[in-house]
Image (cartoon, rainbow, N blue to C red; front, side):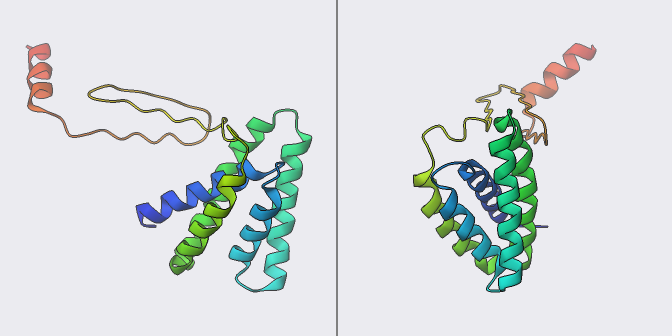
Length: 152
């Protein structure tokens, strides 16, 4: 299992790479991602560039480009998780790539990414397709009392 910090880094990387597709930030994201994942092996780097180009073409050619982007983030997240699992020392290189790419992304470029947050004792649910991650804090004594009173 991948450390939570590296898993979050992989998701940030996937989101940035997909957000850069079909934008002015694309060339830097494409080159940097292929160089990072290719690890100095030209055939591997070329294969990654081909996959990136094919995915970017999907974003350009489909009428629902936000939907295509939502579908591509988990794919690139999976690739980056696998890469970081095999190369945890490369986390710094991925962070550097993100620092290079993020400022070049258009304002609001990741508007197709949904963030849902509940504060206090609130509950929030948000689904765009894909994975749902649910986190709950520990129950408080007041919760146990209310549950017992409801049963009473």
